[in-house]
Length: 278
Length: 303
Image (cartoon, rainbow over all chains, first blue to last red):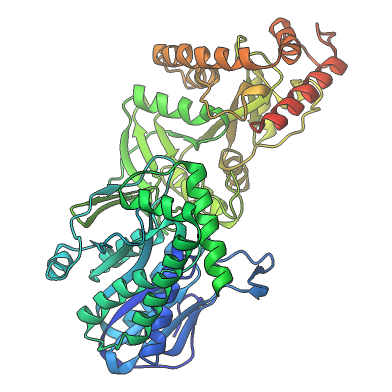
């Protein structure tokens, strides 16, 4: 299989049709990575292909994270029983069109009929973690929106890129899918700003629950529910140990804004506390 | 990657005038102003997605409505047997976070633009950009002209308010033109297509500011239109320049007095040949440059 030498296929597969979930490693609260990791784990996802990083990532050395040298990874996994394909990747920094087109080419090669594509993304929110979370969906085709309307999602979002900013990779992927007439949606979950650099199990569950229902995955979320309980307990402990944290979160719960300094202070408190707890 | 032509106009002895954004947007303002005044018609574009990351998304009621990319468009205007093709690129294709186009994509885009020039049998190529100079913002900018063939030098010497690199003090005919405004000239040379890059002067202390510099665009257009034997009113550029000059004056007044005193001396600079004694010596110019660079480096806006 040739994709301009960018794609390495380790195992040829044939499935009648499938859906695909895409997650990026650099998402806030690691949402994209955590969601795709969870799907791989629970559905026994098997790696079958990858995108060679050479054209898409700077090859000027390696990044170090948590003491470990990292290297860009862009891998495809398949869960044959659920007719699901998962793509988990670092975000490319060059040749975006070729990279995103490659994702769809792999899907189309292996699944003549790519039924639906979902891409997961986190949005930084200035609400408290105790506020109700609303999962937003942006569709690339009206029929996709129609299909999503039956779920508990906000499917009516209006948005345009602010001056000085650029669209997300998710929007770019949606647009390419639209060009190929593949129904696709980006799923956006607000993540409280003070959890953006850690993890947010509740956000993961919200996205995963939707995917479970829509794709009929039959996932048992008991472990994730336990993780949510533990995180909520840790956050409650942080509030009771540090009155300042409690005051800030109380204000967010009352829909009051914090100053920039207070935001930064809350982020540091929570990060230090959760990392210390771990 | 492809070129999309909506139509194929029949053109007589056309020239290509191309530009991309750069310092002070001097070239692109000049080219796009002329294109607008002449009401040139769009006839094609270079498909953007392999060159650029999108710049704007519009989502309406939960549906992705539009994804906009920087455009790279061709226009034409028929003018008495000397027709013009305009190419206006909204962005330079950059790689690796560089400011200006460089590398494989830039070379590819330059070739695509010249494919169109040669398809329509263009006789010559013009590009335009900025020449960062030790001039004052109250002075009329000159135009630095760089041809891609020696045979064009006698002609350029006849242009008004224009200098060759060998006329610029201390340059000895050397220099470089960064990005696609320069690269296109080089690729045209490789194809045997005569070309000239016209660069309007911009004061060194303005090069790092997010400002356009229409005064220099006007200088470029005066040379270009004279050479093409077309008469156009450039009042719009004057109006734009007046607005920009007010902003520049406000900025200028924020420059520390001792630096400003040095820069004020540039008001009295007259253009000289390297051999002529000027009102400011080369040594003094060097010192002004150093002081200015030091100040802007400290301020974080130096170019």
